[in-house]
Length: 110
Image (cartoon, rainbow, N blue to C red):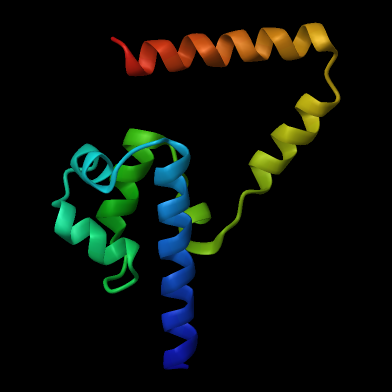
């Protein structure tokens, strides 16, 4: 039972690290964004400490990363979105891309 909990904590830490890396953020940048010390965040990302509800809330507020993904690896809605976009025409895909690009610019350069 203890080993299973440790394995789950390690998987959660990996999903958290993945979420940080795809945003091209250092541990320090990510931790500061959620109001956490870099050393405290590093312990969570290494699986030494668990993820608190408060940390999950701050991650959602800052990055829109769901607690379900971090805790359980569930990303059904993302998979649904990917399937829906795959079915779009090239023109519709370009509109989606331009919208996301504009959102990213506003989010990161305001």
